Image 1 (cartoon, one colour):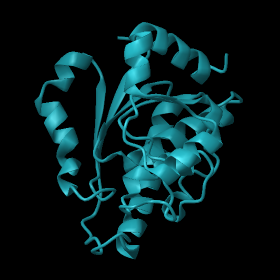
Image 2 (cartoon, rainbow, N blue to C red):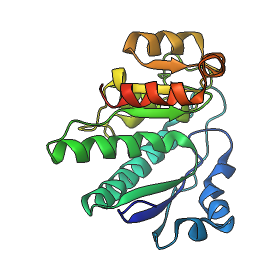
Image 3 (cartoon, rainbow, N blue to C red):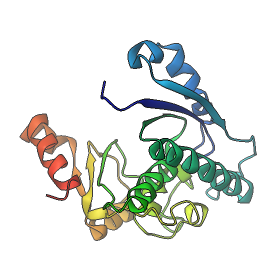
Length: 218
C-alpha cells in the first residue's frame, strides 16, 4: 500500500454494453473482500446509473447516450475530488465506458496542477477506440478511449473536455481482438499495442519496462 490514502468509488454502470449486470460489479468486488485487501481505504460508496432501455440494434439510443453522459460527468467530478484531496482513486466497475470519466479526470487534475497529463497503460483484450462511425456493435464501452484521445464521440464530448490524453503515450497490453477500422484508428493515433504473441516473445518484464517508458514519456 502506498503512503497516499486510497478512496474507493463504486461505479454502478452497465449501460455501455449489452450486459447490464456489470453494474453489480462493485457489490461483488466488495463481497470478495476488497476492504481486507486495501486496509484503511475510505469507501465513498456507489454512483448508480439510472435504468433506461437500450434501443435494439447498433444504435444504443438517445436515452442510453444521455444517461451515460450524465453519469460520466458525475463520476468524473467524483474522481477529480479524490485527486484534489491528494488521495488515490480506486474505481470499481461497472462496464468500462466509465474510462472516459476516470481518464479525463486524471488529465483535468494534472493540467489544473500545472503538470503534463500522464500516459495510459491499458491492460485489455480490446483497445476501446471505435467511434460511432466505426463501431460494429454500438457499445459505448468500446469508444471511450477514442474520446479521451480527441476523436469525436458525442456521448463523451462534454466528459473529456479539458481532460484529453496524448495517444502517443497510451500503451495497450494484451490487445488481441481489435476491429479493422478500430485498428486503423489506433495506428493513426500513434498508440503502442503489445499483442499477446509479442508479450510471450519478449517476456512480461521487458514489456512492462517498455510500457512504463512510453507512458512516462521517456
